[in-house]
Amino acid sequence: QVQVVESGGGLVQAVGSLRLSCVASGSIFSINAMAWYRQAPGKQRDLVADITNSGRTNYADSVKGRFTISRDSAKNTVYLQMNSLKPEDTAVYYCNAARNYYGHYQPGDYWGQGTQVTVSS
Image (cartoon, rainbow, N blue to C red; front, side, top):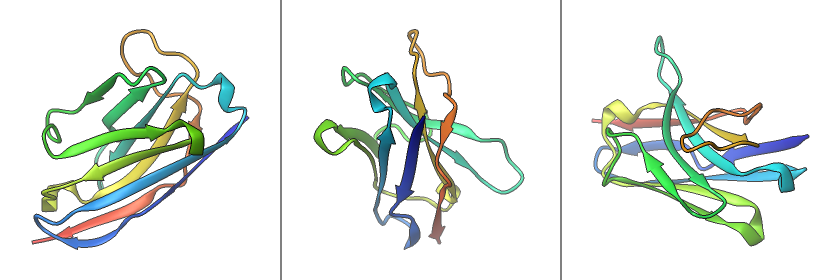
């Protein structure tokens, strides 16, 4: 089993910045990739960014150039640095861990509880 716990959400004004953290614990040796998803009220949960153990990254078009995903293997932590935030970035952000990665990210079984990000205009 793997547990992931997010932190770092909050309220920020537009064009501001936030950094989210996701700490993984448990059988982390089985994890090959991790990702951030977000879900706004009434909308589906969408992939924001993902990162493999080799450091390969991928971003949704809506966040390219503004968000950066990174990892600190020593701390079993994945970060999401969010800059130039917009009101449309408002959502609950979830961390996900996946055992398998076959060229593109598919959500694994391990989800965090989510952290709320609210961007005011």
